[in-house]
Image (tube, rainbow, N blue to C red):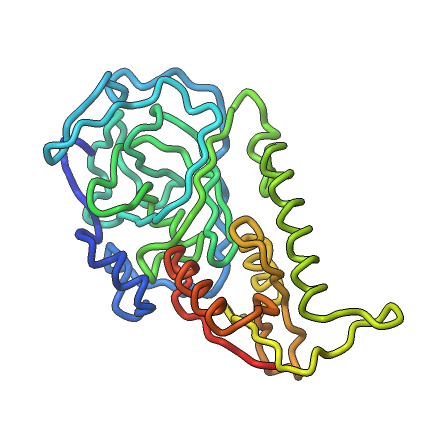
Length: 295
């Protein structure tokens, strides 16, 4: 990619449109359509032990006046941020490690991870996850952390939108269990337990118990609605992912009838001010369409 610098959705305008909640203005980077709401059955990349690329791992390199230092190892690498994708325009061109880019293969580009590196990429908005083989450098515009192939973007349900908030977790090919979906290190497990304890305390303050049963506090309860899905599975994916970022309780509301959506609510929240502050925090993660509901 260093020989053919590119970025399919260039500039900071992509991040701005995402935060404003205008997905209709974000087409697929290659111009290829996609039914983003439907799961796509595409096989993950299969991690295997490979030697480092002869050409893709210099000590450092410079793009647009900025110097990057590729890592010696991907061990323990985990990061969260914006992902984008690249497609037709670059199909068949050489990648940074000398291979030909195939938009239908499960590959990706990263600025500093060793080439090749296998990584699990998870869309934190809908919970979809896939394994890719990183064999290219980029993206070099805006605040994006990884560029995915078209097929990887489709599998994550982000091809039509163009960008998504993701987690990138490196995989050790010598340890197959590291590729498992949803695994957390011990430190993360402790954090999740602490957050769950904080959620219980918050609920106890909002709804005191009487003879072992919760009762109303005499005032309406505020919730922040952050998603509505036709599939309960997708709603529960978002529920689990949000637990990594916030201490408040996240629940999936049972739909009233067969045509109603499964709604994801955060709360109860102590005040409208707290709801507005939480809404701004979620907007920074790409969830820009939250709304306050009262029960």
